[in-house]
Every structure is written in C-alpha cells, then in structure tokens.
Image (cartoon, rainbow, N blue to C red; front, side, top):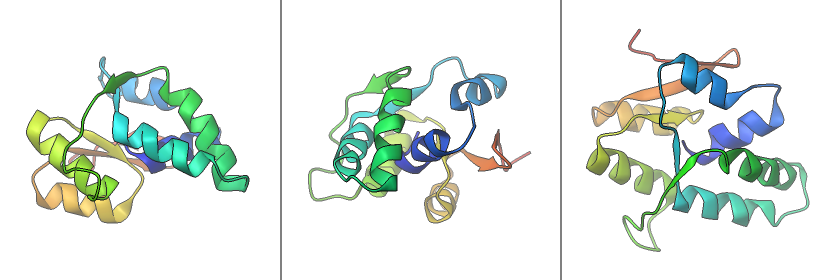
Length: 122
C-alpha cells in the first residue's frame, strides 16, 4: 500500500482492510518507507497531518515490509515501483500518476473507485 491510499482510508468512511480481503488478499503489507513518510506528514498539525496520524494507526494492522530500496535520496513512489518489481507484488494506490507508472511497468495495481478497491484489469 502506498501513502495516499492509507491517508484516504483515514479521511473517508472506508475500510481498507475489508476491501483488500474482499479482493482476495490475505497478506496485506506496508513498506517501512511508507510508514516513514506518514510519520513525516503526521508531524504537521494541519488536516493532512491529522489524517496521516490516523493512517499510521490503520497501517499498524498490516504486515511491515522492511526495505531500503533506492536509498535515502529516492522518492517514495520510485521506491514503491522498485519494491513491487523486486518482490512481484501488487500495489494499492489512490495516486493516478503512480498507478499509470506501475501499469506501464507491468505491475498489478489496485485502485480506489467510489470507496471500493478495484482491479482496473477487470
């Protein structure tokens, strides 16, 4: 899962875990660098920071993937692409640009539509 889908699930009445399970996923994981990004955003006292802190609580329900792909100077979206490619995993995202990038790389993507997780492949 990426940062924005977790923030979205915190900001809307939307149960991310049950949606992922409905899609047939029994192992749901969050990369450590996504958790780090949520912590960083959560330091802010604005609305997005509040939702990031709630998203961290949601993320605690899922497995954590310890990863340092790409190094410290690589952005989180690039790290997600590298990790998904290396592990052969599906990525759940609410980010249209990241979704297009992942799909162009042949990585399976789940996205949000009307507060539901869907597979754009059908």
